[in-house]
Length: 579
Image (cartoon, rainbow, N blue to C red; front, side, top):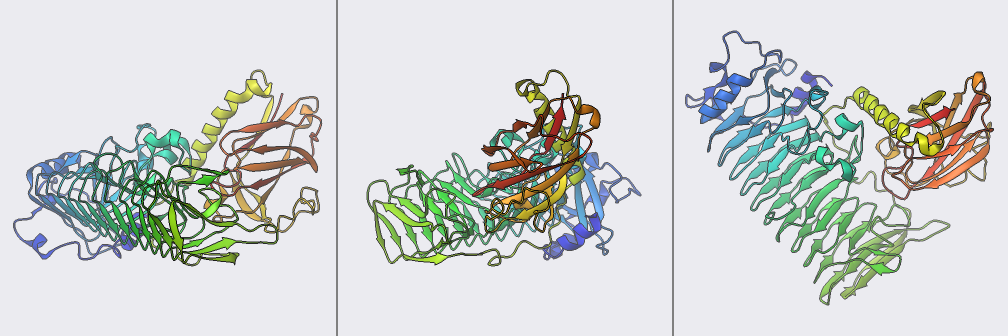
């Protein structure tokens, strides 16, 4: 997406960002610090004059223009630090582009205010010069008593907004595509081992902060986060978020914090909330699911779980995990997209530590098909009354619309190259265990679009889809990327149909087929013959195919994948190798 498109759509969210006082004499224009005739098209490094202006000006104004198709572009390396109580205003049709560098782009000192800043974090432009950027490379870092209004940070290498801050306000702000995982690893999903290179939309570690009418999409770790010691008395209200291109950690995390954090009318159509902090309140919130544990005095009132259930203390394989004291869970709606919940065996599972819990007036829409009916509710230590259960098949995909006017863009070519490089390194590390000494004689890697079919009725095995000529109607789907980021959360079997040709001169060689990752159950056929099965989402696996390959001819590789949640499908590339 071009800069002009980014700016023109961003303006639809930036409302009246230039107060009348911005035109008054006590605001200093940044142009007074720029060299005479300085180009404003992004071609000039303005780090020195902008840094100086931030340090010297109590009221600083960045003039814009009248043409959204040709925005005024200011550029700087990270490290802009405001004065205390400063007012910094960006005019319409302006863009602040981050040049390669480490640490926070803007740091607001106590009492400073920032409005109208549209920031291009330019994370793809930092590679390969900077290979270890991540959470600490903030977009807008706040301290205390800051006000951030109508700002938008996208494609930033670290956390977009927030900090170890108290009594700050974030209003009508938006974050998109935060974190460096895609740049460094070519990945489109979060894993804990990559946490240092991730990013949040809004990370609040302090007290008395307000995040209102804000949005966060594709922020690799959490969209909204108030976690760890010191995070208390924070409020998120009328915020929205979710996954579009990435499989992030989740929508909301209130983890290991101090009491009295609350979320009001916060909505994500496809991501989840995680709570492990006492005295947390959730009112009229919407998410794919809600998972809580070790959370005393949890209040969940009139919330909606769209697919994955609600749990305080997961009940799994006839055993409880720790819940919390005196929960109140009332007036919620729980829809189940499949027979199993994300958080255990029940759609609604609430464990009160001791007595005093109340679970009342909840509507539970369990999944039921011809083979199975999901479990609805299980509680311990709770008064339970007025809950209703309805069985059927529920599609909630249209209840809450996907975000519009997305402006953060993804460098898919870069991600593809990195994804392949990471896969090749992993493959090389497993060669000895596979029985290959040295380099393979020949190798072919499958990554990108191949024919794919959804098996909604799980009939593919019986109908022998793995046999040539019995393949169903297909659509294109990329191998090397999870399918839930391509076709949504589909929790029925999916089939991949691939072809490759091994050179005829490899007819006497041994052959292996190596899978970079399939979530989570995989059954593999080669030329109509079953090659093997694997269950487990996070590890690579392989099968020896010696004697089953047809050198010099087309070979047909078929993979049936199934998962009850998570990445889904062949999210890693596939290699065929001979020796």
